[in-house]
Amino acid sequence: GGDSTIVKLRGNLVQSGTITESSTGLPVMELCGVLPQMVSVAGPILNNVSLRMNNAAGAVLQSPVSLPWRLELINGKITTTASNLLTLLRGCELLADSLSHNSFISGPIRKEGLSATAHFLFPVGKDLFMRWLSLKNASGNFTVEYFKGDPRQISPTCGAGIHHISQLEYWAIESDASAASPELSFADPNSGGVTDLSS
Image (cartoon, rainbow, N blue to C red; front, side, top):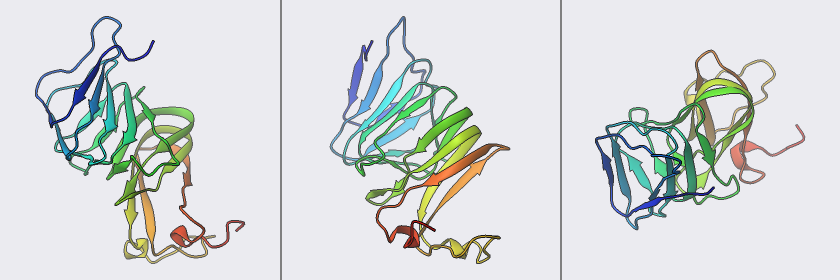
């Protein structure tokens, strides 16, 4: 078991061909530079290949990236956009520490192929802070992003049973005919306007 090959990338990751593994290898591409690393992937990543984020300066996707096997977040944020989306394909696991602000996705992240999954963590955030969201009993494909801002600019209307809406932050969850129950994080008792946890 364990990683058979770790490729430490200190510069940008620019790839036009196929990245794959051979035999029973479990290769890891580790982003471990000291400056922000640009990631541009034109070809597919196949089989049991992992991407490990371990650069405090972070990484920026300059193309869409789809991962088949594993994403491991140790240090540094990965910046994504709707057009340069990070997608975890069916069967791709995500390893992240929900108690650490050291590594998260700044922008949208998509997870495909959840099937009655008891718990799946989306380590999203902005600026210096992770503000994770998890989905419970999730089935389908989901794209999640965290925003620091006032969601009332999207709509000032509260649905039935909603007392008030935070002016500080919100999460966007997009799905395609999927089902799940979301669980939101909070950083302190006043995060997101939460002042009474019992209610």
